[in-house]
Image (cartoon, rainbow, N blue to C red):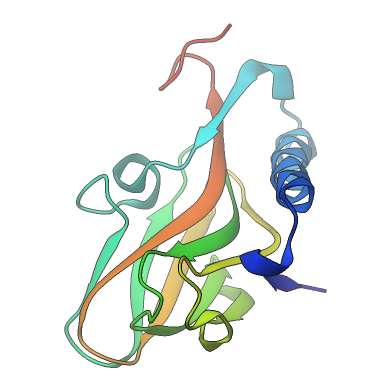
Length: 167
């Protein structure tokens, strides 16, 4: 069962537990395909490198209202991604909802209006993991045209040395 929380209702310890669960989900995904987790390094998501965006900022331009695909990225071999939340920089986002897909399978829908009015609206949810060779797709429902600033909270696990050197 997927659950989402508004940041204001969570303690710092609860947020840290969600982040820890996300990292554990990445480790489980690596193990599930027969790979060794210790060969991987975990880092934050980079918009260009990991999601195929045009810049290293989490900005999305809505030229029309309604549903539109904002991320559609097939993960290469030895890359795993987990997303556990979304943060909006504006207290009144243009986005009304988000849908997360693995390949063509819908996994989760986030309703954004429940965070309207918070200074920094953040929604946390149970981690969603994409494994190597799977397609990560995110669709957004735009309530209005314009530029949306939203950060996907998550982590990437990839082989040591690809982006970050091993310790």
